[in-house]
Image 1: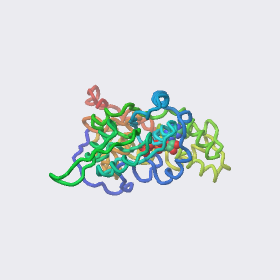
Image 2: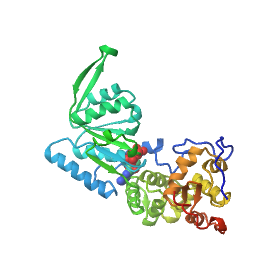
Image 3: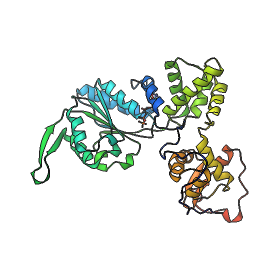
Image 4: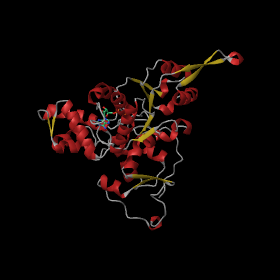
Length: 368
Ligand SMILES: Nc1ncnc2c1ncn2[C@@H]1O[C@H](COP(=O)(O)OP(=O)(O)OP(=O)(O)O)[C@@H](O)[C@H]1O
């Protein structure tokens, strides 16, 4: 059966509506919440040696920085792309530390006018690292000013308006721009081409996250064994920020229930309380998957219908729940709608219905 996707109405009931980018205070959100920001400074690795994983990026960056130091030059501009929480801000701080340079931190949405950018650029010191987070969200005039600044260390400041406007050239000290984006594909090619080094940050392997967790546990003065760290790592969705956040929740549980010691049973019991399952799915993810399997026989079902079924906005299902479910191979987006994979049935401990004769052998059902 094929459920239609014509409904565009606002869903009613169920889970409370959420911010489409992350969801309601999700423990498994990649982006930082207030508590993360307060503790992250203490947990950030301070050098490339301390930075866990991303071996290729680390090795390449190490060469770029060492070569610049040897030449006595400012390092090339660096573009870091990857999902939230993978360590882009951390790496930008490490670049500054390794170069012995100060760092200035700002973000694309904070630079709405070219004048905002000119003010920042003109106050940089020689060799300073300028970290521009969410660089894909800068305004177009600021972006165009950045082209010249990156290439020639110069900007034209426009004074006046209309026919009387004049461009006053302003020399800038050499600096290193570190741009960060979750979507490198959104950057206009002229901007992308001006970076001397581009690094695509990948999701972390569980063993790497175990190292992140052991390191953080040490800094937070927590006792955790190897199995406890593995249990948390497996639920951290390949993301150090989530690993650190889950560790803090497990710490709370361990302090109340187990004199502070964290092992596999404690980690597992704690994360069950917080509704993060052994694969890192939370309540929203499981609600989407559960509806797809139990109400629609595994699909295909349209996105809007699925959203109504779980009482969520369409965007929330599409942007918050689905990317991880797709990445995990639990859900497929096909031209005919959302379809559960065999792994989804297994994950929720359900048996798939017998295939109807018409469904067998249809090409592309899981392919799009
Ligand atoms: N490779 C790593 N080794 C150890 N800890 C890491 C690593 N990468 C990230 N972390 C930890 O994860 C947290 C989040 O990292 P960071 O803020 O650098 O992510 P981000 O990619 O900049 O996220 P956003 O896109 O939201 O700005 C930090 O507290 C940091 O300590």
